Each structure stands twice: as C-alpha cells, then as structure tokens.
Length: 215
Image 1 (tube, rainbow, N blue to C red):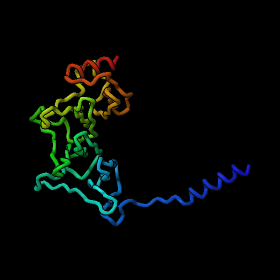
Image 2: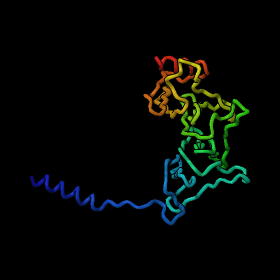
Image 3: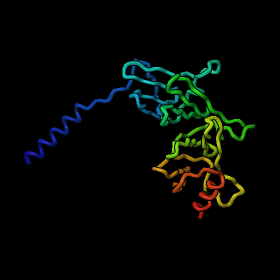
C-alpha cells in the first residue's frame, strides 16, 4: 500500500513539473498552423506551416519565402508535408504551389508544377506528400492522381482514375500514399487502403492493381 501511494505521489509530482512552451517563440519561428515537422539527418528541425517553411537550429529560425522574382526560392508558403530523400534532398509539398526540392548542398529550391500542355508534368498543383520506394523511385500524391518522378529528375509518369474504366471505379483520384517496405499503399479519402505487393512501374501495371482492388 505504501509503495502504491509513493508511486502515485511521484507521478503527480512529475505531472506538476511538466511544462510545455511554444517552440521558437521570439526567435523567428512564428507559426500558428503547423501540418508538418521533420528533423533532418543533420539534426535541423524543419517546420512546414500555413505561414511558410522554417528551419530551426534551437537558437534561431530561418524562414524561406516565396519570391517569383528570385531563382531558387520556394514556390508557396502554404506547406502540407515534408520528406527527406536518401540523397539528403528535402521535398516540400504545398497546397497550391506544386512541389519543391531543396538541394542539400546549395540550399536552392527546384520547383515542379502542373502544366496542362505537358503530360509529363506534375498532375496537379495541390500536393499531399512524397515517398521513396525500395528502388529509389520518388512518388508524389496530389489532389489529382499519383505521380512517379522519372530517372531524369524532371518529368513524371502519371497514374490516376479514369471515369470510363469500370475497373478503377472504386478508386478516387485524390489519393494519399506511403510505403511499407516494398509495398505501395494508397489511401484515398473515405476508402480502405489499397496495397500492392510490388510497386507498379507502368500505367498498365497500375491499372491492373486497381482492377484487382475493385473486385
């Protein structure tokens, strides 16, 4: 009984001492809505917010502003998700400004946008997230379909729902995605996850995966 009371008192004291403070307050990290955070391989904290992208070293925060007139800047301040690839590049998904890759050496951003006249461009400007598969391919989930970045690092292969294809009727275009080992797992809004034992590499393989999932 005494041991139980002592343990309870210790837990209460620990709870009383626990204090939460706003991180980076007064040090440049002024964000109110934060959808994404990531600690990179160098220990730097990246914060993706509705007000912009920030890096924070524990002392001061740096904000990365969108500037159309400045080459190498980020495309949008409304950040949705962050992902660091194996080469150290930081991929920044935005709400209305497409996708950005931050070079780990130069610190410059390369922007990827949707171009209605280019079928090898990103399929939508609204990007949900990025993931890298076991083979090193980068996959990008958008508001209108899934994209795989080609080996040239500039063009995409698109995979998305076709209304006239009954085999894909169960799957929406608006898809989130992630990887579990070598398996590609797609999660669409209000739907059960779709899992593929292997990552599709062609549009035909993608359609076959969707056909099996819709049975």
